[in-house]
Length: 384
Image 1 (cartoon, rainbow, N blue to C red):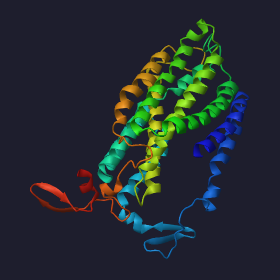
Image 2: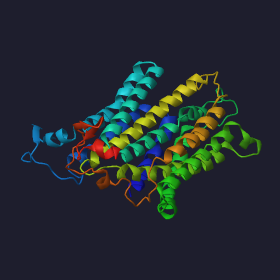
Image 3: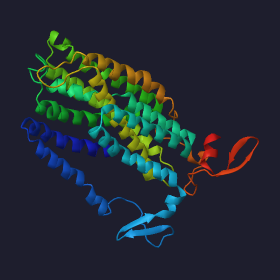
Image 4: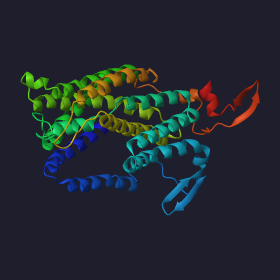
């Protein structure tokens, strides 16, 4: 249902984005985007979200202002996880500010520091199984270095920029392929539910990684102009390849990750940890785009102007969209427990995590030359 609603929204937006872009009405797109971004505020403020209403009379609750309460008790019990999760939420705008006003290399260094901070914090705060799954998510999202911006420039470049190239209009590139892609996405959900939903996490992720890497062959064929040599128009191959094949693969990859994000949430911190895992995935996707920008820049590629140069694009596709996801992503899959998608991903009871447990370990007495921890501490449970 969630994916169906998302695809319906995607279908509606793609209908008008292409024509408005071709007409140069980008300011109209900005205002539409702003209105759509503010729309979730109403159901949130109206109480449509099915969550328990907290009151000022509950223990640990502090009233900040009218209609705004602060759960100081829960924060004190699990202070470190909440601090790390909050920093993760702020990491994307921080990185955006750095990359906007500083050099790309500084942005990449800042991203690396933030990622290492989150990994180290997760290692010491959460159970070992959680950390392994968390690390797998980071690697899998980072392994897909995004060079989509270069591909977008190539497909929509003018005849002067790319002679005898695809020269797609935005109406075709965004709207036509987007409508077809939305239909394909819906079909992919049904396909996943019927054939892949009963698989274990590892094989389903490996299959989607391999298929996703093979999907880039379509881009390679068009850029090398092999399709033109055998009489297949760019519009036909791109529609069948990108709009159908690649959109299907993206949906097949997104569904198991959504299940993993939901199953990683521990008791008592479901919303916060779910936001943390999804946030770190989005942050890694942002870093992947930065890496892609760096790769494009350092390869000497020129994507705009009358002296465009896309000679390095085929090599980048083979290396970063076909080889790296397989060579780096597949080994990372084995960090995830090989359980069925309907089974529990992390046994929180076995890990010793409950709603009443503190997430911060407190050191106890020392003996035999090693540091021991209280039986209820998370560090002790993680090291067992």
